[in-house]
Length: 147
Image (cartoon, rainbow, N blue to C red; front, side, top):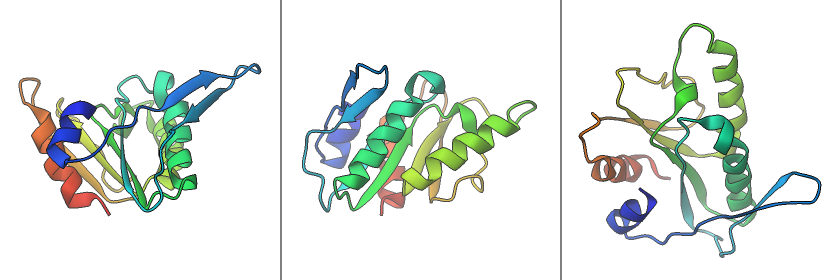
């Protein structure tokens, strides 16, 4: 997905370098000069427990390296759902993620429409089915929301 978006947006791609430190914590390095650049982090969060901490570290690292803006492109955003039993985790997820990003683009392919008022950042939701080529739709949404 990131490779397709890179081509559609005429951008560059940087794969974060993740390593496990001796104490068991994760260190995320970006290894590029981001000063003044607009950054789009592409991260599927349909299984957020496996990726969420690394995403937060990458977003913070991009900001610390001087990125003009940091956005998230999350084709699967499980914690955006508003359903029974998910209210507490959804609010916590949002509270942790929103301060680290300037905008958000996600996909709704299951008829579960993310609450756009939950996040404190500009957000676009791309409507798509499983058969849809979502990369061009995501690229258009990124162009609308990227600051």
